Length: 197
Image (cartoon, rainbow, N blue to C red; front, side, top):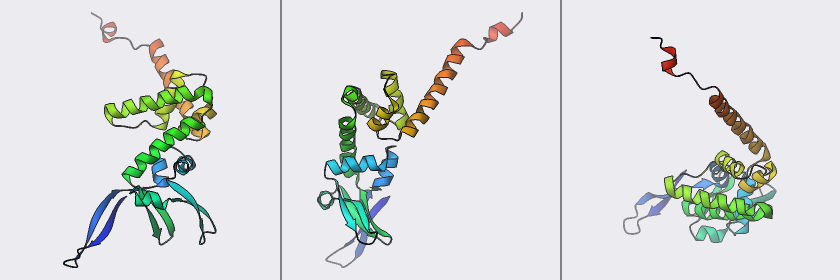
């Protein structure tokens, strides 16, 4: 969502809106990255981008943007009509995404760390090539192509998605490979074979 601020011209007293850019809530950003919100929040907690605060209205703890992060322009703490919420600025999303990559690599079992490091490097190169981040399915396929014996729970933990989603991607991949193999076994006859002369 594009957020704006009201500014007052001190000389004329005129009030006008200025755009402060495209901002996303923690949940929206997690959905954009195809990961669980809880995984994103854990990574943000580790680097001090957010903190746990008690909310008197909800009678529970919430994860809120750290005030220091707000002062650095990484996002905004907003008190909305239905309660507080926070949004990340473009710069805040970059910091959170880097923290997430580091968090995912650090939390995966050590025997798989080099594989996830290689995936991180490949993602960086791919972004430089065409500017597009990899989807969860693309990450899954890359990992399985490079290590067929990697357990689904390690993939889920390493890319920050649920095991259920990993199994879904596994089914899609197997279906796609089967269609490809079938196409190689049963090639369509060429047009020249149908023409009788």
